[in-house]
Image (cartoon, rainbow, N blue to C red; front, side, top):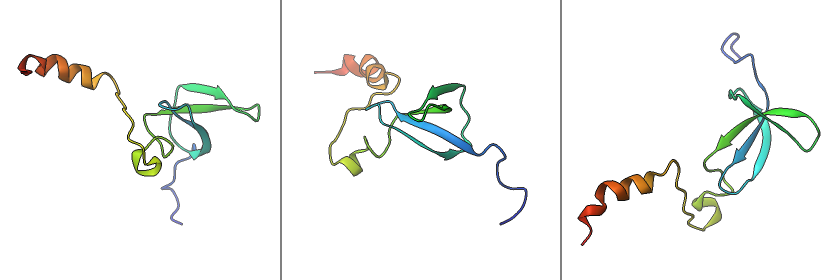
Amino acid sequence: MKAGIHPEDYRLVVFKDMTNEYSFVCKSSATSSETIKWEDGNEYPLVKLDISYKSHPFFTGIVQFVDTAGRIDKFNNRYGKYKK
């Protein structure tokens, strides 16, 4: 492998799907200011995900409603006056 192109801070990180509270640990260089205590008793950086394979419709076969940051409310407020 080519030297000097890989990140130095490659470590275990907890990724948490916020739609269904599913969490998993894997190696990553993703930055995070939050930490979480994992099942093994160690504390790891926490990266929050809007969607993962446990909640994505392609993998689950179930269409789920995911509203991040109130986008649907913003749309309805903006264009609700045009309803018939």
